[in-house]
Image 1 (cartoon, rainbow, N blue to C red):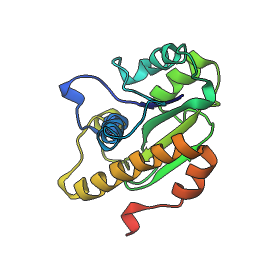
Image 2: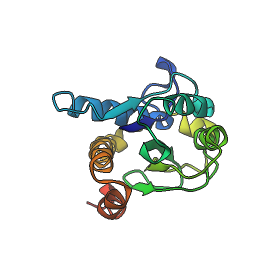
Image 3: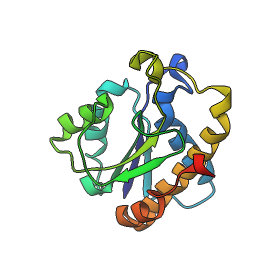
Image 4: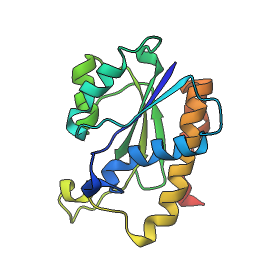
Length: 176
């Protein structure tokens, strides 16, 4: 059994914000796979705020047949340009409070993650930037990156982290 968890914040106030890109990708994955047999994949969009995501992930790990190596956390990353996705098999939180919460709750950094570039704006306070919506000129890239990331999550679920890293860590949608 695989668990794909998209990070974000609940509520309409945060819908379609940069910080909620994990939710958008899980929704896209569910839509694309609704007619396929995905009984071996559990999708999770925690109902808690991003900074408390660890409790939801820890609870999901209590389900039978889900091990630590079976989870994929999908989150935004301000250190990557919009259009870039990166798989990692482990690593630090890098300032991301959702990942920090998960690391603290699980007591380990050893879990798979798919980081989605949202870019950054040095002229905007970080909190305001990640809670902002995508600009009109970013919408084409956003649609493509959501589609590509949902596809990549499916490859991770079917073939594992190494195959996903080899196939997707070199892709840059913006460069097309």
